[in-house]
Image 1 (cartoon, one colour):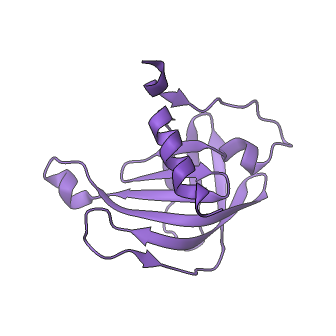
Image 2 (tube, rainbow, N blue to C red; image 1 turned 45 degrees about the vertical axis):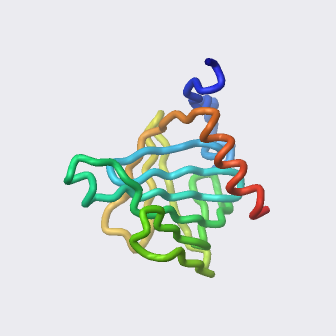
Length: 145
């Protein structure tokens, strides 16, 4: 069925004038232990459960919702608003964190994000998503607009 076929964010032609939003909006990025999704005015960070991975199982440890605003051609700010623990490790936490500045570098399908407090950058590869994921993201953020 075509409705569940993977959707790959089209890779826009990039020029020096392209905004960060044009480069990142509605894209999903996958790393070894985390996923980052840029969706309109939101950044969703998903952290995999390392302990479950050691046992050979896949699980999500936490999902972080951030408010997002683009601040330059290769930068954005994000403020933590909510942390969910879907496997029940801890109760959901709400936050009113400050906006923090991040820099990024985009090389083809590789995204490198840096933050002044991080020891090393977060390196992610562009991933694909299915229509079900699009519906889930739209429903998740529709109530928060």
